[in-house]
Picture: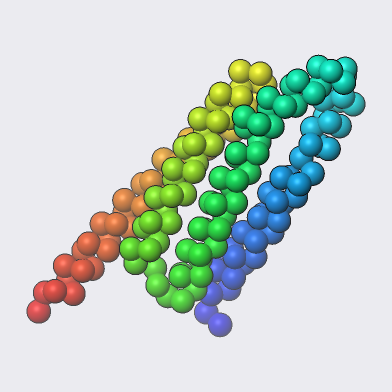
Length: 154
């Protein structure tokens, strides 16, 4: 087995494991938030519920859904790479949607950073990843156009 295939399989396994983590966060996130706000930060139950509802509804749950979309598209793109279908238009669409998901997560976490300042780091990281993925998409799109042009040249 070639080295790139081993690396692609490792990437697919890591993506699948991370998707399991995100799904667990969706299912059990409220328990983790309760432990964090009441046990660690010392909120009362009433203040906890108010803070939890706003944070979960505005940031965490939509972010998890966007994360699942991103990880699903990343897994599909890795399958294409495994099949040696790298420079295809389907991968460009995947990269475009992934970049928009990153930017939307940056906006969501930036908004939630009003109530919890450390989320600014997450917002900046998501925005940076969105920009990087967008640049990779543009490079791949140019490579596809060049390949199509070369295919037409005799």
